[in-house]
Length: 446
Image 1 (tube, rainbow, N blue to C red):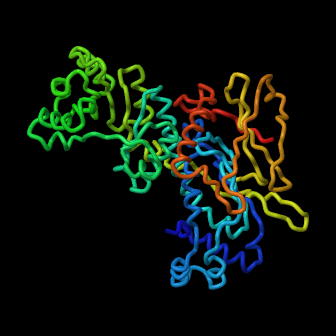
Image 2 (image 1 turned 90 degrees about the vertical axis):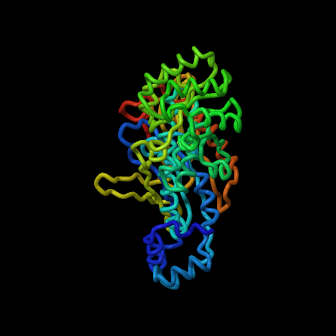
Image 3 (image 1 turned 30 degrees about the vertical axis):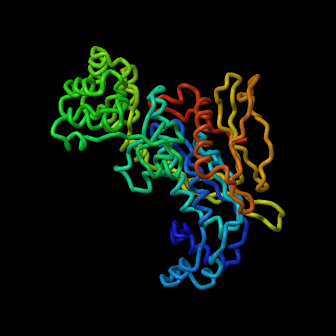
């Protein structure tokens, strides 16, 4: 199915006008970046790039799409002829999926003709803004959980396709599993789930429900013990499943106090290896409040799939350079609107890593003369450090229209998850604090 209509009308009307002015084929470079992080956030996590590449592979104005545009009178016949069956022939580079980003990080760059590059604006932003918001929230929750596994279970709190994308983004940022089966099939995210309160209410007693679940799934299952009385539910669960009961789940109540009571009761009943999983509208702050409590796993829904207060990453897609045929190179361009100033020229990201393996700064390498970005030294004395190193952040996703398959599908998700684990490990410890503060790394232009 074509993805060409996942765009705004004004992208096509700009192409129509550019064809009329003779500038539609002028080579341009667009960049995706955010001017600032959401309030209270100290870093962001790039996610959605693999999904974007999949969508780009299907970005075609096929005959049916062109016919619909013609019926609606969206653009003129000359523009429709230009769009019909056209394919992206440019190049795309950007941060690896799972990488951290900061204000003005050049997260994605698209180079091609104006017509083909501007057409991708809406698709790129809708994908990256959503997925990066979810991944950024998920990374904060993973940090708050302090090593305990988390599962994504927010499918019923968002759009059905957004649920699949959210599960993927959360897994990249460190969540262990999802309740969403489509995310498992489409992206290879591990799936989990046992029973809800409805299963208990279906049966004539809690014990009957537990016996049915254990008979079907074995004693290693997770029993939901708070449909009625928690203390009685725990006692029944252990009596039915035995001391080898896998886990109990708590979905309500005063969790900090309740989990301690449940842990004491499980231990007193001999179920010392039975784990405790908590759910109940968790976010990073409630998870952090449970640090030190006997919680073995968390399930997170609504807060995760809505970005936990920041439903968008704040990315914009701006033209930063145009080819200057007369000068034989590239000319930086930038808007100067109040509060929305951008910086022209091609850019590439690097990270300064100290001798101790901890990141010191986000380096944005700027080339104001051409599309290719040359090597640049760290030329500020305050950034020099014995034993420090530079890590390149920008990779190639597409060259002359040829999409790199390594970053797509199941393999792309696995690669992104591993990359994120390595990137987050470089962040200064204070960068993981939930309190408000400056970005964890300063952005330095080179």
